Image 1 (cartoon, one colour):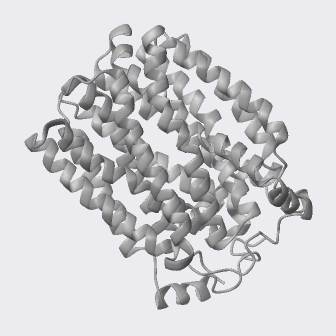
Image 2 (tube, one colour):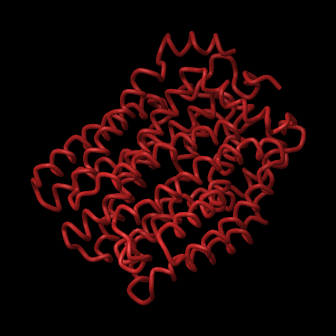
Length: 436
């Protein structure tokens, strides 16, 4: 099958266009029927699978300062548990994507969930920061199978605007995990040690493995890629030759770098620097997730009218403006705690306009390689997240300044990719003809 096979996307059709058929014609009749008849059940399971990226980190965020004390490590060393997770998460996706295209979606997800359970148990039993980082990598390699292949399942079932709408709906539902995660983590920390948080993740992994039995296989054998995995891995280099793919990867990648700078930096900026309680930190974190849920719903309603690329650019612009205000407040201490909370809320809320549209746009470019493309986009996002969280940890000085600076630089990078690399109008039509 050719790399440029776009059999399920008509020539010249891009995610900003309105397709007449919103269900992927390449999916089997049984799968399409399941999507129509059991949409809510499938949506719930896919949301749970995609939420693994969030629950694996958000649940233990309030415990970072306590973990640093218990493991006799400084803030930077403990923040590397986030970077280590992102290393496993980004590199693991590059493997699971081609595996999912070759063997289907369900079996790789099941194997990944087993790895997640093992890694979570290892984290709970860790006695040093380096040991915890190692087990976080194992945990991440397992978790990323669920995330990357859940995205591919959406592309198996839907196309065009409908795919973007479904991604927005998934992200709205899965936002419950980070909405509740820090608060639940704070409550667990209130009655038990930080190790109990990872034992809870063990239970979540086992429960999700059981729920997987209710999810149908969305990639029938006739549509699977039979190329050797080594050749499939080389597909990434071919995909990255296209400017449009680079654009979508850059938009989401830089934004995720900023998001993980936020995730790594806010526990210390709020709890250590501004002396808020772990429980109140959960409330502040949840406020941002509410913003994400609202903008995801707005995106799902507006995408047909305005197009996914236009909304993505608007979100990138909003995130850049908010992040510049954040950096200014972080360096001047203007507004105190509210000087951080308000611009961070604006920055985080932009997620609803950026992430779903960037993913849907990239998957729409090469539908025959949805697994590999999903993995590539995910690797770029979480790979840049490694850089964002690591920079915050490396330059940690006890103030919010490193976090604010990294978020601002990454958000500006996302905006530049959205405006300079993702084509629009006539340029998009010309590129469509070239790819086809």
